[in-house]
Each structure stands twice: as C-alpha cells, then as structure tokens.
Length: 282
Image (cartoon, rainbow, N blue to C red):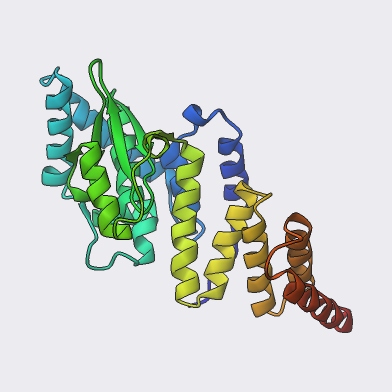
C-alpha cells in the first residue's frame, strides 16, 4: 500500500505546539499529530476527548484516595486492570506501538508511549507526573509532598527504586551502564517526542521501509534541524528514492556540520556523484 504524502497543515500545527515552553506543550496532542503522518484520516480531537474522559474517570477515583501512594495505586488499577493497558512484550518492534492512537485503541505499547498515556491521564486527573528517560527504557515520576515515586508503566505501574532501575539497565546492557543522577532527571516533552520518532526511525530502517523512514527522519530534522546524523540519514534515504538533488543537499549539510566525521571522505565522493546525476535530470 503506498505511503500517503506528508500532511503539511498538521506539521505546521506540530511546529506551533513545539514553540511553546516545554511544560505547556500538550504531549498527547503532539504525539497524535505525529501519528497523523501515518494515519491521515486520524481525528486528533477525538483521541484527545478519549484522554479527557479517562482523566475525568480517574479524578473521581482519586477523590477517594487522598494519600499519594494510594492515588498511584488507584491510577494503576484504573489503567492496567480496568482499561487493560499493557506492555507489548511479544511484538515490541511493531511500529503501531509508537503511534498514540494505536496504543489507545489496542491498549498496548512500548515504555515511551505507555508513559505518555500514563502522564496524560494522570495530568488530567490533577497529578504531577513527569517522564524519566533511562537509557533503553522509559519510566515516569509522580511528584508528591513527600518523596517522588518512580513508576514503570510498561510493567503495569510497578513502583521502582534506584536499585530497580539499575537492574533494568543491567538486563538491557549486561551490566555495562550504571545509573547516574542525570539519568533520573525529568525528560522534556520535546525530548519524549523525539524519542518516539527515533524508535520509529529504527524500526523502519530495519524493515527497509524507505518512504516511511524518510517521513520520520524528515520530522526529526524539523524538530532538531542541526542534528548532523539525521541530515545524513535523510540524504541517504533521498538517494535511495533517486531524489538526487535533495540527497546531495542534505549530505553537504552533514559534511558542513561534521567535516571530520569518519565517513566524510566517502560522502564527499557520493555528493559529487549525486550532483552529476541531478544535473543530468535538469
């Protein structure tokens, strides 16, 4: 099935969201605008209403649970028992796990998108929740009058200690990565959106889905225009689609930003070849 063209009005809407101070960025809306790239018929407002409804239902339960620890238990019970959200351990690299509409419809996702649901529902219910971007895993922290609580939405809202975080990293990296204080700092909404896109980029490149990979990398360049690696990768993807002029432009930009990169000499030759091919088409 052909990939639909980018929806420029929705991209401009996403751009406008991302110009706001980070705490004012509506994470759910931005994630749904990213999903609309893959699902052009997606009704963003409809899914925001679903999040509003879940937040309202949770708020009613929290009125009966004034203590923070009990509030977390009520939140976990609502999302994971009543609503049935769960981590997709069987098909972790299914791209649908990274699209918020699919996560809301299928009630399954990966750590970053389940954390997004957790944060958006909790925020609507009046809880102060922030993302925590551990290497290779994503969790959330609920701020309370006492001590903050670390929660793992991918594992049904399990409460975590720093030791638990280390054990998760050990499973992922074989003991080579140690938890540092900076890893437990709050993650910006903008960085969460970038992480969602990087997950999609990795999946589509692995699957050799060039058109979808290009669309995702194009969004990454839009969010982080000075990222040399993304410019290089977009250039390579353009070249795969025989868009020689666009490919040469991106690879030249990469070489300007990273003139001493290990692949610089190789790419200089490729830029010259792409420019020759582009000239023959004009």
